[in-house]
Length: 593
Image (tube, rainbow, N blue to C red; front, top):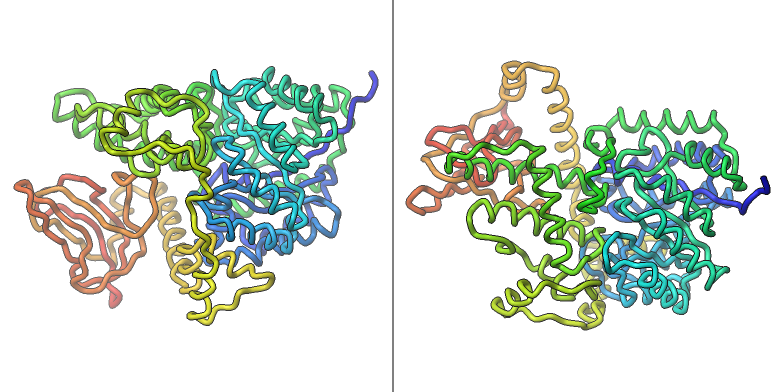
């Protein structure tokens, strides 16, 4: 058999963690594993930054600029290219970023050692991609424009090929086929790769496919047989599941097919595997949802990406409780979590075409899922669909984040008209005012240094809430409280209910309901779904400070004080729970105990 073209591999080490759990390895851990990844000898590229990487560093009380520089340095020295995920209009966060902050990002990331930004728009709107291509090139980076792959009547080979033509004309030097949910059909992906390569033979094509529904290996073979150049892979113990195929399997398959592929230093692979497991055992495993280790063909129908399954299951649990209370009142059987999961997937399938087939990737996967989730609740309440939609969900539908690929359902068009909401085709980035001057003023007033290559200024401008919490030290305290909560939960799984209660409450006082009613909390945390918000374990309260609110059956809202104050160690009554007088709402540990 004649040897086919050379195929290169990329290790998406950042995304391996993102698709498995909440946090990323620390700077010292990244420094330890980088030389081992290099020693494996099979990777031409490594993903070193991207969505959620910097936020979670800040949340853990660690400076992400130090982590990015430390992780990139050994790869830069070894001649291995580094790349990052870039959400286009949203850059490195969930909501839009002003032009001057986006432009600064490429200068900072190039200085920190990142070679390639993978620029994507969740709607495939080129207006959100092309400015970033120009800023990346000006900073000396290699712009990789991205096609967000999904499977709908709108998303055809012609549709994607036209987008590729446009971004290549704008200066993109590479194209990434980002199959974020793994639902791209292999034959379509092969045809698309061939179409792009035939017209643009000089353009590098990199394929990124998650394993979730099980199509990714077939897709890798198809894209390679049609001209792809680089394949994203993972390593154990964070391969497969909702993550990515393992390098060993991908290399074996392509080698057997006759492609020129690099060999793997298996001793180094096993060492990298051992180190990654060590990071999991030490602390990261406490934030990994076990469900993300499993593949599921159910994802083919709803198209939801694997990376958001953990948060989705948490939200679903909160809605399940509320729905089952309604069903019990109606004399109907309660729904299991499996029942809820099928209902949610079916509802996403219903909602998705009606909101115009937005590719289900951050943030539009979250918006679409949230609409479906709220529909399940309001349908059960007898109120119908599309009753509980916030401005972010509406913003997607109305075109404020970019052009929707398909057609919005007439029902939603009419509903928008009734609510005096207007559709727009304006270029999304023109809706934002430049913001760097304001952040410079804040740093000057606080006496904060702009950092090397303005990296600290960038960090504040990109992640203002998390950066302020990092600088104040509150982020580190909250992270340690979250970690302790997770450790206690794991310990509790090995204890009887009585032992766990005694362990948790030995030093804590019970906070009880002063009367019967429904509980509501007002906390400062972030959450995708208001009914599912829960307070932060570890948060401290002063004596007499309001802990929550109780709405009594006749409608009066009564503040419930945190008694003598202290640290919150457990919440017994969830958001919206109905309680009786004397029911325990929470346990608060006094500082003097």
